[in-house]
Image (tube, rainbow, N blue to C red):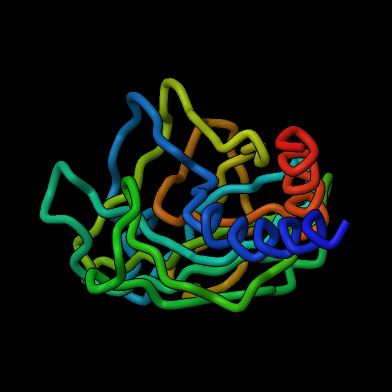
Length: 200
């Protein structure tokens, strides 16, 4: 029993590290690239709504590094909101010095619990000056199985700055912002327990 407990502790400690690099949006095909929604110098927040299929913890916020242009040129503030209340839950500024995983630069944040079945909005600030791009209208979309994309988001008017993007559309996008996550600790513990039992 002592060996089992020690094994669970070891697996429980390792699992978050192994799963930390788990992007919500993995990749897509097709779509059109845009630099800014309204063309406002003070910036527009674009993004998308999602629903976790199980409780997860966001660990990083990210922004698209466009391989078709010069990569990420300017900094972008990215945030996650509670969609129903429009309360900002976490934010970070991502720039080209942040590490790249897949198609996005990512910056770590304090672990943020995202509840199963609840709707959240992720958005990123674009300005005319940053000369960066996002993708809308993707033909296909490949998401992590723990997360379901639901709607695209954009603001009610230009020049609102970093505020909740209140309007929606159904085209697959707007993939500027992204996040990485790990499963909730209880899920990790159950997975570790199953691995130990199979090894006995």
